[in-house]
Image (tube, rainbow, N blue to C red; front, top):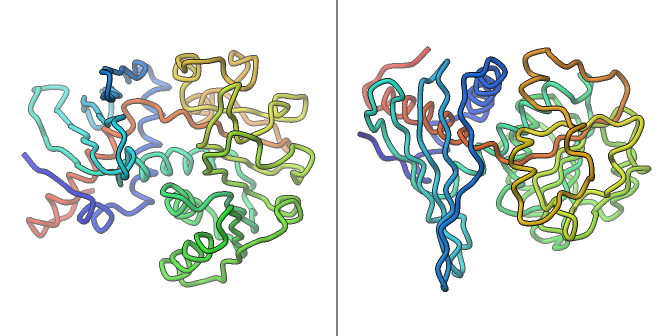
Length: 313
């Protein structure tokens, strides 16, 4: 049984591989070969634990869970997390991934699958709104999917945006990443807009969007707190989520009224639903339970292969 920590994970798990694992998960989901119940929480007076549980029985044949705490501490929920991966055929514990990095990689990988299906094939301009823990991985997924010519970052703290810009430049080395001060003008030119904020009010307006632009949101999306405007559900837009069940399981109503009309990512990935040409498309991430297990599984396999000097197919 193997254990991976944050300092090992990023070096063994390329974003493109994580995206491929997530894509296989949604293909399995389209074929009815996943089990993905809503989150489950156990609370006390001081805090609690939240579990996401899932199984994928077609490709990885895995079952497992992720658990993170909601106790108040400086690190939030980004550090003390565990993802446990079991073999669905034997019940053997294959390994665990400890730390907050897998969650960010998994979330970005799901968004990468959606972007590959929905974003314009000739996308050139990327705008990233937010510069927190998740933002770098969202950008890494985008740059694994499309060869963007320009990247702009907007954040309430320009210094945090500059730090993220330097990190992206150092990692990808092929572009200058700008820190924007006029969000509307950049959004109006963007082919892809990634929203990764904790904003409780919309960070953009629908009418700013370039026709055919793709927007991904991983931030708040409840009626009282949402980073996208409530009017995205209109004629001329196409909405997709990775889990309708999870949209319905929040503690308050979702920010758009008609969840039933939102397409599912597995139907788009499998070709059961074809995105309409030329419309604005929105990916509304819920963090589908079980995806963290399949991404952890491939990371554990890659780490084991490296340790033994071999490779996996």
